Image (cartoon, rainbow, N blue to C red; front, side, top):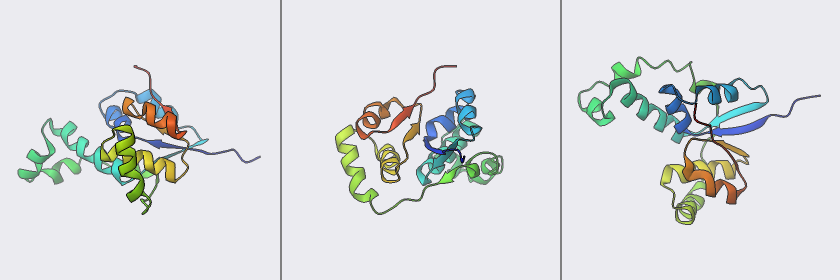
Length: 151
């Protein structure tokens, strides 16, 4: 019998918190579960790398950019460590009509609305996030929200 693979979209909040040393057990349990395929999109890559710069330097990413220091910080990042093991979900044109609706309906900022829309469009049944802004939208849209407990 072939095992069922469940897709779980991983919000950048979990990746960023794991980089800080939080929710590592929760993320590792997802990461090493063979029945789960973890998914991300370009929003997650952007948000994670933006916060990675801030975490590594203790300074605002714009400050690092102005000092031409981004390459030094990104040299620390090993792309084989984390993000390459996730399934990458590309955006589709359907996002254009769904995102403004989700923003209005759930009072979400654009990136969170894009994340929710990506799950909805691609039939991804679960979203893992430490962001409580997803509680109501996920419930209404039929997406299971996986929120880590405090460690």
